[in-house]
Length: 130
Image 1: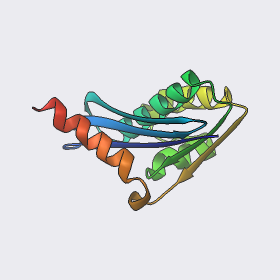
Image 2 (image 1 turned 30 degrees about the vertical axis):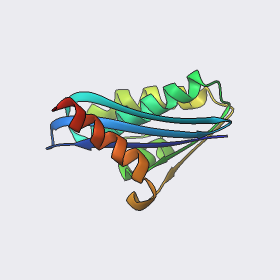
Image 3 (image 1 turned 180 degrees about the vertical axis):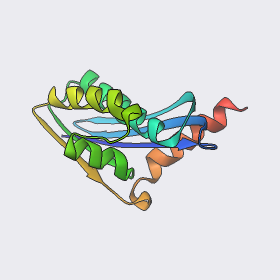
Image 4 (image 1 turned 45 degrees about the vertical axis):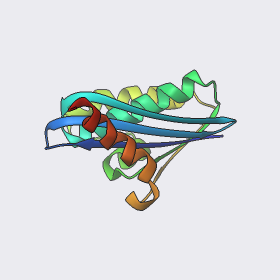
């Protein structure tokens, strides 16, 4: 099983944003830090989810457990629903990607348990502004 830790950071809301992915399991240990441009924090969190699922797919895993400290992302995936129309395309794509795995879980975790992904997301913004 792959454990996919995701997080996003925005310097302002909206503002320069980055995502961080920390993926471990099945012999993999990946860290990704990616600048995603100007956006708000919720869009950045959904973007982190999409990138995490895409990376898990590339690794060929059939069992994926995503961990996020974003309550809106986790609740949206669990309910398969989002109120805000702006988030719908992200949710639809995430649900489609999640369905490609034999087993998919998503779990909310406190920020303290998501420090690696958080640091990677912040690093993406910092590196962009050097």
